[in-house]
Length: 220
View 1 (cartoon, helix red, strand yellow):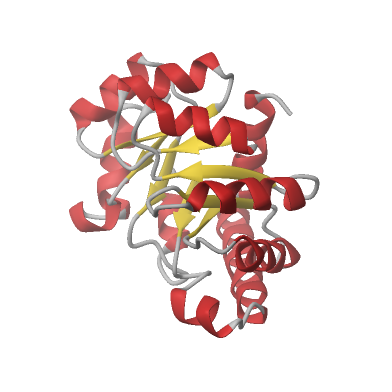
View 2 (view 1 turned 45 degrees about the vertical axis):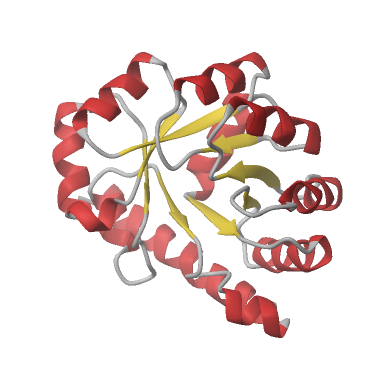
């Protein structure tokens, strides 16, 4: 799947769940539970030591059924490692020209973090697939996203940071092409307890909320 097809899948699904774990077997079971709930996408956070093995395990066992990406990527070397481990897309929290350029070298879809209009404009100049607006809730949430969309209507935004089941529909109405969530689906307590079933339940709820939001938008 090329990067354009990866991005189309992200937009179609409308959500990227992020997972933080250094245990490959646990991460695989969590990813599979999320996929069972109707979300065939998982982002493995690169913020913890030793997570490369987790990403490699999840990519090897799950990429046939879902997109597997690397998140919280901060350096070009992180991108190289992610690619070697089997990642199909890259997500950053802040903007890094180096990360974008290396992702381009490897033909990986890149969802670059940005928050201010200046950062958004820089991301546009680098022609990223989408801008991950993070942490959007802290600066006004859907209202802030809507304001940016009026200035940059050609940019695809992925809303992340404080997005939950209650407010996610507002982000789509404000113009988000997708949302990013973490503990709202795969929280650390449930991971530690091995309660993967709850990830399936939460995933189904998010998919339903997204479908309803898009349905309402289509009738406005």
